[in-house]
Length: 218
Image (cartoon, rainbow, N blue to C red; front, side):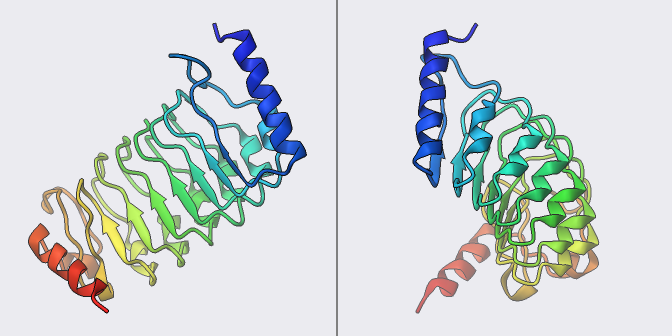
C-alpha cells in the first residue's frame, strides 16, 4: 500500500507546479522502494508542462489524459512496465522527444504517426515484433532507436524519413548517413529491410565510428 503521507506530499507538489505554471517536472519514487504505479489526475491539469520525466517507475499503463498536456515537447517514460500506449499519445501536437525504452510494449499505436514534430524516438528494449507503417509520417524524425526488440521486418515507409540521421537496430548506435548507410547488430538474414536500406548495409561498427567521427569534424 502506498504511503499516505507520501501521496499527500506528491499532491501538494503537483498543486504548486500547477499554480506556478511549471514547464519541467520529474516524478520518481514516492518513498523508499515505493514507485509510482499510476499518475495522479492533477498532473494532467498542469497545462504549462513542456518536459515530463517519468523514468524508473512502475507504470504499467498511461492514462489517455496525457493528451491534455498540449504544450509537452519532451516525454520520458523509460524503465517502466508499460504494456501498451493509449491512442491519445497521438494528440500531443508539440511533442519532439519521446523515450519509451526499457518497457514491455508489444506494439505501438498507429497514432504515433500523428506526432509530426517528433525528432527523437526511442522504443528499444521492448517486445515489439513490428513497427507501424505510420512511422513514415514522421518526416522531422532525426533519431530512431528500436534495437533489442523482436522485430522481423521494418516497414517500407521508413524510407520516407528524409531527415533521419541515426537509425539503430541494436545495442550500439548506427548511422544512416546521406540515406546511404545503416548498421545492424541483428543478423540481416532474420530482419527484413526495405529494398532501399537492404542494398546499403554497413556491418562493422568500426566503419560506423569512422563515419561518425568524420561527420563531426568542422
